[in-house]
Image (tube, rainbow, N blue to C red; front, side, top):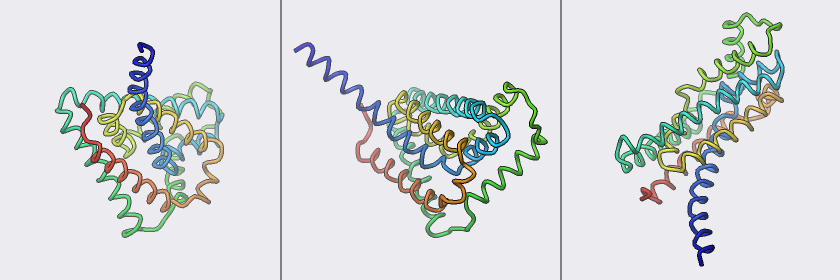
Length: 224
């Protein structure tokens, strides 16, 4: 009987962890494809070592994810858990419906190639395109540029909201894995992906996903 109780307790703690990881990883995969940090990794990898760029970018995104999850986890200790829960729901609905509105009703055209061109201009203007940098300099530069580009991004705010209502460790793991997949894809062939992936389709999918997360949190209510 004792072993059965231990298994039940283990499952009860594992399910929230996995739920947070799946939600976070899925959110990152949908929202980060074609994002500015995606193209920063893609462009830097064309000029420098792919491994170095990947490590710098995923390091920055991993730190950002951990910080965001920690903020979301700490929020209920400072504010009522009920308030933070419904604030997270409001954020999901806001980002979701805004993305759906912009992609379905008020689409302004453009695409990932436009985002790519803009990111290329910003990188070229900021660093003079030196190709003979040491590996450590490239690593630090990629880390700093990626961290600053991700700060205040939609996915960062959504991660904070998700960690406020889900297991923060699961949210962190799922977010890091999602970022690793996106960054790996960017480093290996992000510039070519911009030619074939529809930014509008990604925006619609991401918007729908945020709305689903908000609806799920609304139905399940505040966890005791």
